Length: 524
Image (cartoon, rainbow, N blue to C red; front, side, top):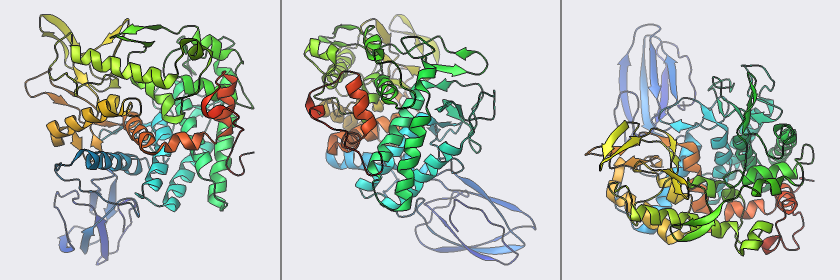
């Protein structure tokens, strides 16, 4: 019996219960072992798989014999040693980091909806953006031989089927989305809106981007892969991007059934490039052709730490769109005028933030050439405290960053900030990650790779995040793979919707030159 299921056993039943290195009693098993446990009639014994955190009840009769063996959640998935961190050379570390981070997406999932957890081991709700990052992660797993293609097909198909069948509507509760958009966070089990969160335009955009990666990768003729492509197309065509514009030049950040559209709107420059490109390419609900010009009107091209570029404080804003789209050589009108491109802009943003942390104007502990990286992440949440003659608010989750006219810095460093920028500055980013791994070991580097963040200034012993966050895991994994093989970039270069959106936004040159809408089979 696998840990993902529960079953009622008759008195005297003999069952095989297969687990990883430990289960609820805290006993470690490296070989088969027989344990006799006596329980009262109708007792309920709860087993917890350490790796996937799915607790399952098993109802027994009078007594039973458990035959316990080592276990791997996830079928044919390859295993890594999750014990104490071992010394690795840099390349071995990066390989280990990639597999551990992949395992997060394969193992941490709501098996009722197949949506990805927002965070782990704290479990509050699933995140549609994290699901958008999980879908490319499954493909990365196939291409690195962590899982087989058949398993990835089944997981992807279940995910898309649930999304397609999830209830939509304008009700205050009981639905997962409205007009093709999804709520930012969803409940476990039924996948309904979590509390009163917004219908999120950007999180839906990141979800759809992941869906299109699946559409272009799974190009087989078998029924399941055809179904993935058809579902992906239907999900994309259902999104009413034009409705979210609210008749204005820029798109709203979201909508709530209680109060309508949010006042906050998407104006450049930030992570929403992918959102605009998708919305402009829609055959069913496109936004206006001049929407990209409206987006770029608010750009802020200034110098920060010796690097002149489009500024945005948290590094995720420079990373998320380029997790999906290769912007190394192509240019819109704005970048042609600046004789640059968005990839180069993200390189400068990464290096300028590193330079800020090396300068370390607030003199936080640990900052330096290999200890840097400010982005949206968890934090110690200790409130306002004196620090070097100043009052510093040590916040919990916050959009940390440093740029011209933006400084949200309380000494908290997130590995995903460097990890999400690996393609832009490979040496500086991987040196930073390797140094964090070597210095902090299992305080920071654990079962699924790096915990979300750390802060050495808030106390003598420092603070290390207890959780992983799905979207932060995704940025690191996808960008590490893009640097290694350009995998996700290459896949979306074949997608007709991405190509159409880029061209409507005015991008030319590079790989778009003479590029026709190459698509995977059955996309037309």
